[in-house]
Amino acid sequence: MLKFLFVASLLVAVALAQTESLTSAEEKEELERIQNESAQYSFNNKINDQINDGQIEREETREGTKVTGSYSYSDGFVKRTVHYEADENGYRVVKEDTQPIGEGPEFNPEGKADVEGSLIGSYSIKLDNDGDKKHYKDVRA
Image (cartoon, rainbow, N blue to C red; front, top):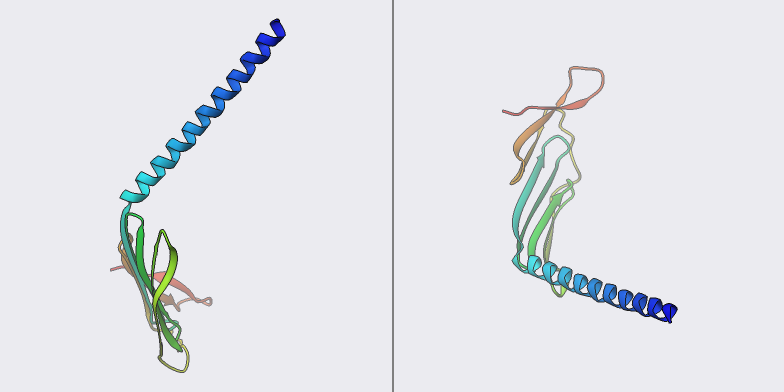
C-alpha cells in the first residue's frame, strides 16, 4: 500500500510539473508575441570609400512585426540597391535596381573613407603613408 501511495504521488508530481512547464511555455510565447507586436526601431549607416572606390548604405525600420528597409553597394562596376520587407509572410525583396557605373574600382591612396551611422555618428579614415606598411588612420574632426 505504501508503494502504491508513493508511485501515485510521484505520478501526480510529474503531471503537475508538466502542467507548469506548459503554462510557462505558453506564458513565454505570449510575452514574445506582445514584444514582437510592440517592437520599434530605426537605423541607418553609410560608408563612402573614396580610397577603394566603393559605397555601402543600409537603412531599416521596424514597426511591430513589419520590417522594411534597403541596402545598396557599389564596387566600381555596378551600383545595386535592394528594397525589402519582412513580416508574418517572411522576408521578400520588393524592388531591386542595378546600374552600371564604371570599368571597375580605382584605388586612390590620397582619398578618404567617410563612415556615418545613426548609432555611431560619423568619422573619416585615410591611408597612413608615413611608414613602410600602409594602414588606415582615424581622421576625426
